[in-house]
Image (cartoon, rainbow over all chains, first blue to last red; front, side, top):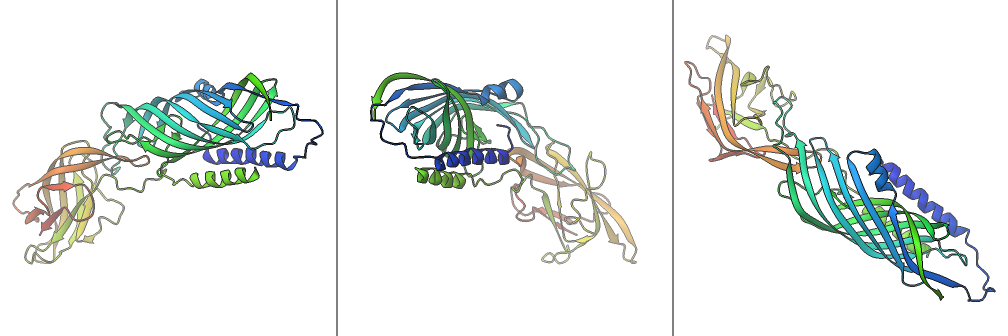
Length: 236
Length: 169
């Protein structure tokens, strides 16, 4: 994710403040319409739009993420994301490529009270994330006094079979833009639970988690387009 | 419901209080630290005058950041090659010839070692550590270095906590 962290932050704040305004405009729906209206229940399948765009325009990033959620109760949705990343990160003294897939499982709670017939979401969710990946240290130089001739690190080294797990707190919105078609944005704050580190290197990037900060935190976001396949209808 | 979102934002901002690791503040490749002692009175430090440091195969004098090598100092910190398993050092000092004439005297010694590249951090990258360091002083007619002696045996240069070598002059 190449956006500067600050703009990520501002964008997420904007999105969140939009959700506040929406709430403040909320008005009590009269209960005159009897409880005959039935909510639709079903599975919603979609993909993250950001990752294919990165894949097209940024040579150092490839990725794909499929998202799905299943409505369990009026406000609770079981949710999952399945994805793949192939990302090269450039640091001052070396660059490395992370390659692997991830799954995130959890639930979303819709905290937005819809008008009857609407199915929009302001969601707060939790995820457990797990990733299996390889790290390849491509190139690098030894960090020593500049008076000395530079020493390059030996040939690229690949560390296979690495794993990591984490928890995410998700904030997001989903809006029905066409019948059954939803656009969404979500932002995840991630906390690393476990990480199988390579020898003489570190997992500085983890698929699904993104950049790992020193204290094991990170953040990620997605823009999704998804389609609802209704299974049945149920009254509240 | 609002409470949900507010607590979510609070928790998120706590998570995102990330520590910055963009600036390298960890220890990188250690310098080789030499402390100068008085050959006649070994428990005392003795300063050297106007020391100049050259490394075999590299043009120019090593000057450091202006603080590690000064005109009148009892210790110096100098870099060791990360591209070879041996570094030749030439240290030139001004010596009083007994008639208050100061003349340059240069001495050469070798440092032989095995290298290991160790990962430090995202911003610092990799550093080199030097193990099993062996020091060999080249004898000449008039060595200003009387004794050169490692402070530990075997000598490893892995940090800058203390001097690695004592030179008596």
